Length: 491
Image (tube, rainbow, N blue to C red; front, top):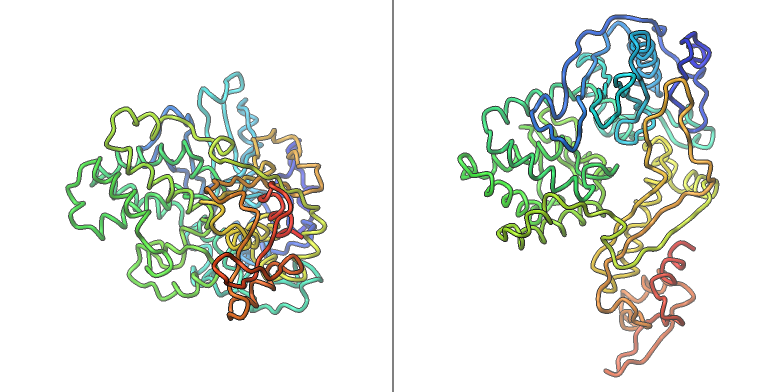
């Protein structure tokens, strides 16, 4: 396949930049890029399932790209994503000729998945616009090829640094990026049928979704997607027979209760009859909720910190949902990250530093996540912060300002962050012990003492406490304890 940026696409700028600094000319396919008419164009998302609101004046469409546009092995090594992006460019060129305003955007901030945002030339986006998704047909490849333990992104293809990794290195995140496109329309058609039969569940879905939107639980990259939310309601309707004729209020409270009580690690959650792949998924993802096929984890992106925030908000909601005056607080008022915590700490690390560290220590994860350094960093940092802060905090969460991407003109290159640092904002909800100048560890001769010393390193020391116990301890020389702990963890 030739370098697609050099193809004649009018003035349209190719919207895709490959990870690992790969050149587009390195992508191979048995079929060249050319124009073929779509197999199908249909509505998607809120308009299809009928949960559209004034808050989000957008009509989602999906264009199914024909099977003969793709090669037989285009699921390998980014070929699908490059071919998909080229097809998007051709659709954009056609729409521009009709006099419409056309922009590129990203599907949930995924740089491998550009979308089209289409509006009237003189119209404003607040007046409404089309958001066009693109997907391969269901028969693009066997879905079993995309099960979590399979490799479809060769490490040696990505970088010479990964030469020690074999072609049996699992790529579950990469696989799911393709599989969700293949199954999206099929999944939504099942949701549409469910909500048509159970209108109270649809009304509850709209209210719960509004509750989540006000807290950024759906918009965030690692949050609770619309597909997962709908699947969860279907799941509890099956598990709780009493919900068959439940009121909207009972469904909403049932959702909050289930979010709090269900143990994702012990429960084999999903909508499929066969969950044989559950153990494969659970070894790669923090949470697993299988779709109707049993091959797609709808909770692929859901992070531990996001789920803890959702559970905390659900716990709070159950205490207020019976109070009439709390309605606006629950479903209308916005709760931004910047006002939701007691203390914030900003971390800035050079991308080159993270790249060098992760290529050596997390090479398989670099390949699997398509070199998403921020994702790897947060996943590595989360358990360290939990252990370091222990009873000093109630919970914490991350916010990455550089991940916010607005639609851009199709004739221009996407504006990229020029900062060479990875920036991460951490919000802490503090407990009463947050500024304790002493971190007390286990007794000196206990088995846990070895781990405590390894974790805290040279700043660890032995101390005798008022109860005459001699324990490992860390003494902080400043009242700004949270900053000192973060600095130690990062270093």
